[in-house]
Image (cartoon, rainbow, N blue to C red):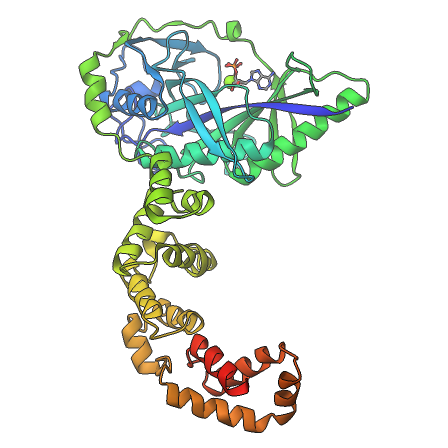
Amino acid sequence: MDWECVIGLEIHAQLATKSKIFSGASTAYGAEPNTQACAVDLGLPGVLPVLNREVVRMAAKFGLAIGAHVAERSVFARKNYFYPDLPKGYQISQYELPVVEGGHLDIELEDGETRRIGVTRAHLEEDAGKSLHEDFHGMTGVDLNRAGTPLLEIVSEPELCSAREAVAYMKKMHSLVRYLEICDGNMQEGSFRCDANVSVRPKGQKEFGTRAELKNLNSFRFVERAIDFEIERQIAVIEGGGEVVQETRLYDADKGETRPMRSKEEANDYRYFPDPDLLPVELDRGFVEEVRKTLPELPGEKMERFVTHYGLSRYDAGALTASREMGDFYEAVVKASDGDPKLAANWVMGDLSAFLNKHGKEITESPVSAEMLGGMLKRIVDNTISGKIAKDVFEAMWNGEGDADTVIESKGLKQITDTGAIEGIIEQVIADNPKQVEQYRAGKDKVMGFFVGQVMKASKGKANPQQVNELLKAKLG
Ligand code: ADP
Ligand code: MG
């Protein structure tokens, strides 16, 4: 039997506010345990939550960016459950009336196709604290620094059809929230994570199969592996005559498998009800229009502009707009090189990205600035150096040996474009290789490559390759 899978993601993006969603405590990462939890976060009796305006502004900005409806009225609700890292005994979230409804995100697939994925809703909620098991023997520590940190939970429609699509969607969402500057996107610190809902059904069947929810996936690689494992597991269960049970599962990265955590609770287990301590959030159109004015150029728009303005392929444009910093760097390179956007794209995605990866650096930390790279491209375009020599120049710039002109000068890398000088080298090579000359003249065209190689070698890579080709043909012909 042929199977297909259905996936829906719930992404938790931590909103990049200075203080918490309902208190003035700091949200800064990495503080000593329980130094950033105030009376409100601790759930002490008699305290009252006060909504952080910035959180609402960020959620509205997100809603506008995905073409969603930003609700005129949304309501905070209490989601009741007991857990040591939740001192109030309930989490403040939004249930029936979320702040963002509908909207969509377009993802580019590897075959060049674009797919539109629906977003069901995005709601505001507070994060819980953290249980610490490692440093305590036979006990559990609780760190409430995280309690009350603002989260935007973004719920997708069940419209993703493979682990790869799910990752493409998550990456696009990651890029979007960073463009919008509403989330720092730091996945190691837990600022951006997701739960994946996965089910399988026989190909062609309309009804969804029973789903499992894979909790707290905090890397793109884990999302892909966990979903792939889960799809195979569910198919094996059904083909073995069993039934998939609706449950919450945990991904074990070391073992590369998912395992049951708890049976899935239904919404009514949580006894949701409107939080009587908080007023409904009412947004007037004026506020929403003010927020709209703060929207930056979005990744999709930037990509389209790169395609039409710089003549790049959709694939290249997509890679260069994956982050705002990458797009800015690329445009600065193009500007500094005055021209050849395609060459600039190749260098940014090629050598530069390879060096950044190898040295574990972000583009904002590149020792070769956009101006330096652009300056070097200028020297390729005006034939001062060949593309091959440029690789050496780039490496020297990376190692702090100065800008392109300095490196070219100090290392004597200037391309030989003087026809007389190249002819001299060619004559020597021809004189040294009579056998190959004979072969070439007898019609063996392939020998040309040998001659080009010899001339380039004799010139230490500095002869202009185009001139070498032309002059060789003339001399040998
Ligand atoms: P809950 O509140 O219990 O987590 P929701 O109905 O809000 O459940 O759905 C959560 C996520 O699960 C959504 O992203 C939705 O698209 C997805 N989903 C719902 N049903 C299925 C299914 N049968 N298979 C895969 N994903 C599903
Ligand atoms: Mg859920």
